[in-house]
Image (cartoon, rainbow over all chains, first blue to last red; front, side):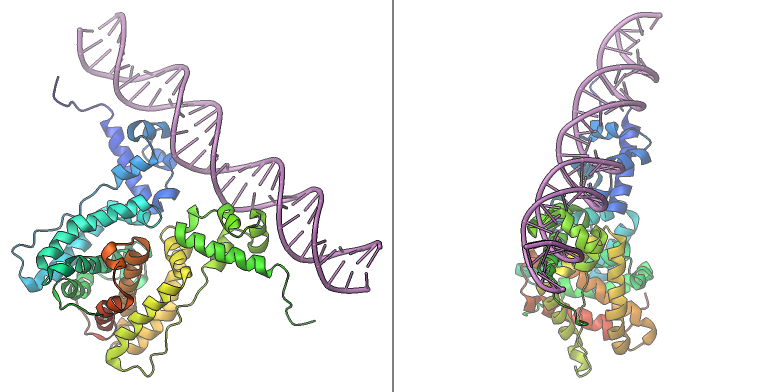
Length: 190
Length: 190
DNA sequence: CTCGAAAGTCAACAACTGTTGGCAACGATA
DNA sequence: TATCGTTGCCAACAGTTGTTGACTTTCGAG
């Protein structure tokens, strides 16, 4: 048979991945142990090794994700900040992968590199299309990253009470003008 | 004699603290080992335990710091954003303690709690004095935290190239209007 | 039913961790 | 010089970690 048949172990593989994402998101890379992940998935630790090779590769599989930025082609210029702010918030609220990646990125260079590549490949092009000055597109994308990652850091990881207390709508309303200015506002000379 | 005399071991204590700050800043709490810190300080690991008790207490001693926010009493209202942005940047550029604290805060609840208390006790009062609406002072302080910690995260930890490439003056120029608006701008309803 | 690969279990390994207690060298005080 | 607290080093502990290999069980194809 040429077609890829579903293996009997697919359920186990998936359970490992779910447990790994949860543990990496909650504890970071080094505190999330293979034994704890295996216990959550109700299997033996050695199965994790068999199916994913080692801890690094397991993390790489668990932290694989996509920002899924919208096209923005038909978005009116002045609503870009609001649209992007809402999208980022929605993405963070619903996917543990992002928390796993951010927590690990602080102490694992490989995870930091992945975050960098996500911003270069996914936020960069958006900024390139919207920035009034192509030469500063990368800087503008970076500034957007500082605000969005900073918000996620304070809300989901550090859990600063005033930031946790904001509703997604309130948060988007505060952040939108910042994103809008970083992307399309006048350049700052310093 | 009542006055505290300098102990012969003060130099060692200080060397341990310097090495600990460097390692915690570079590697985070769990990857910074007592053995590595002791090696950097050119002493035996057991000395670290004798002088600081355990790893938690060593971290607490190494991560003890003060934001040293300026008074802002005689700062014209419209220059508050610029003044604060510059102050934060200057503080981050010159003190490894902040990096050690942020790196550890991502995986250590005790370190996250310390960051929270720093913002409540040091940024909160500033926001309370400047915010047009006292009820929203805490929210405004939290928003300032999202931008400043997010910038530090992207520049010093994730090392996003466009953010690393900014000069302190350029960075302050971009961030100042954001800080200004979060502190003194009109409230967002959501 | 038979059989062999796949799936899962179990025990152990080597390395590393924070931490401890014993013991030697030092240095000021008497 | 004799004494005693201070400073430092060494070796070891107990626990945890990622990882491995041998073993048994399961189950669908022939």
